[in-house]
Image (tube, rainbow over all chains, first blue to last red; front, top):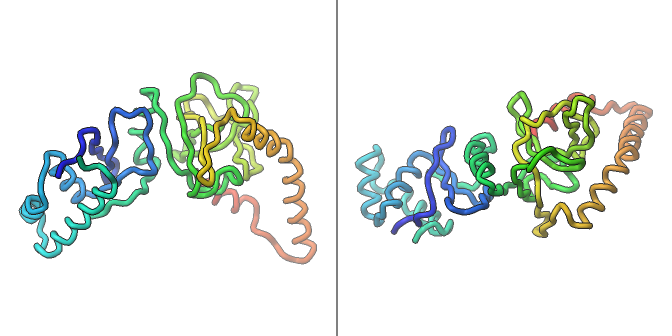
Length: 87
Length: 170
């Protein structure tokens, strides 16, 4: 899984938003808003990563139980798929 | 971990300004009732771009108040000092002294109930003119309602309190 090249992650105040680049219009209605964990996963997906890799890296980075991490990552993957930002 | 689709305007203002500076448009859903009936709270969508120069009468700009609030209201007049006088379509209190340096963008079109409208369309211009020139009647009617309430011993909320609440919307 890899995020399309024309999406970048921008930090705003306490969170992050995913912004399409190279387009003349910017629609804030469809904008993806991420918290820090979400941004961490998004960063990994920008380089390209599979589910297992996301889980391992999240366990290494955050103090979280495997079960919880897997559940959250599945939710995250479903969301990015729905948002149509994957290649 | 969340992936919601709502962001606060002041959080993304930097990104918004960049897009506008590069000649692009920005689209978002404004909150608040001050521009009803044209824009319904949290339902309709506006498309904005950077204005080419001075705003014209009836333009709908997004501007930043000196207190930091972002507002989308209509230019209804010009002050002697050259500053703009603003008012929401659903408001009566005029806001004077809005300067060009406070203007961020101006509405070029909007989407209401899923239907797009350009600001140069006949239908939109008819609405604007109708709404502007009937403003005085709505104002009298509202004042009339207040007097009727008073007659029956009901005290409506003081005007200033209501206004304050409205001002929080953008």
